[in-house]
Amino acid sequence: MGKEIRALFAALLLTATSAAAANAAGLLQESKHQRSEDKYRARLANQVRHQLVMLPWYSVFDNLAFRIDRDKVTLLGQVTRPVLKSDAEAAVKSIEGVASVKNEIEVLPLSAMDDQLRRAVYRAIYSGPGLQRYGLGAIPSIHIIVKNGNVTLEGIVDSEMDRNLANLRANQVPNVFSVKNNLVVARNEKKRA
Image 1 (tube, rainbow, N blue to C red):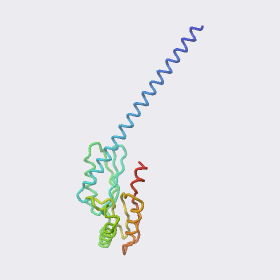
Image 2 (image 1 turned 45 degrees about the vertical axis):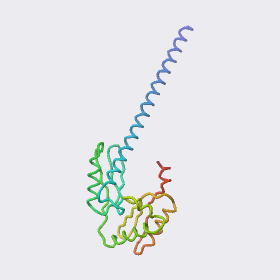
Image 3 (image 1 turned 120 degrees about the horizontal axis):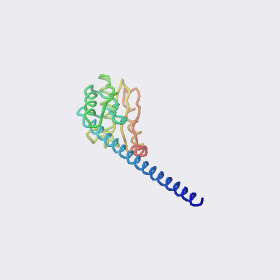
Image 4 (image 1 turned 90 degrees about the horizontal axis):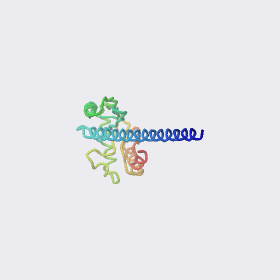
């Protein structure tokens, strides 16, 4: 009887050990799969971002964003030229690994008044001291979206002070109905990621 109990105990112990090992192997495999999935998403996001930034008509007055769900990309934002909307879709469709693209980019209405406001807000933000450094790149990091006299600021800045200064300068431009400040402080962006 004692031998049978020991044999049963040994069998249970062996079964529990092999089950734990199988479970650990499964968790390890799942962890590796999750890491490779995360790498794939990060690589795809970088490729989409690169394709959008390289578009020839993309400017400080446009805002292009995207959302990735596995192999599907949804394009978001606002553009001043209809050709930019179609070019963005074509560029993202050409990326290997993208199965489909849903284009939700809004084409802003043509308006001479909005064009004047775009230039005036641009001058107000980028010509004064404090924010000039944001206008140095090929595509400035503060984007100015104007729709029917309403201004939206999009992009990333280094500090809360810069965010507030851009908002203040945009609000001082004559004939601007409202300013929506969607600027994100870079340090806060890193904390979210």
